[in-house]
Amino acid sequence: MTVTVRPLRDAQPSDPHFGLPLRLVESTRAGVLWAYNGDHLQALHDYAVATLREHGPVGNSSMFSRLPHWMKLARNRVLLQKVTARLIAKAGKAG
Image 1 (cartoon, one colour):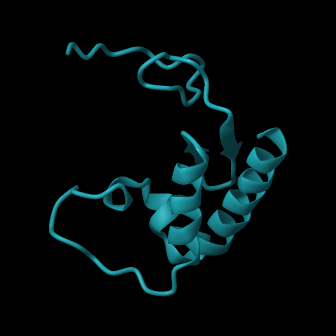
Image 2: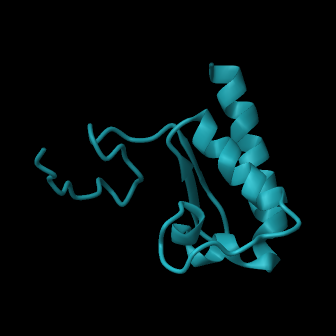
């Protein structure tokens, strides 16, 4: 399998395989939140509402270790919860 790099179109999040823009995207004051699908969005929401965030093995072995720094900051936890909840509602209406 050959991997090719596609430039971002207007710096918008896009599907890595087809290059199409993502539907579940919302800009916040801290950064841009995007999700590939409902399961990805639900995982981000669960991360946002978790009261205990345990660290796994050292390195980038999980999706959560690779999240943007602004999503990991405690001060942005409420913002992340609100945005993921809003996108979940949006996905529910569209689906």
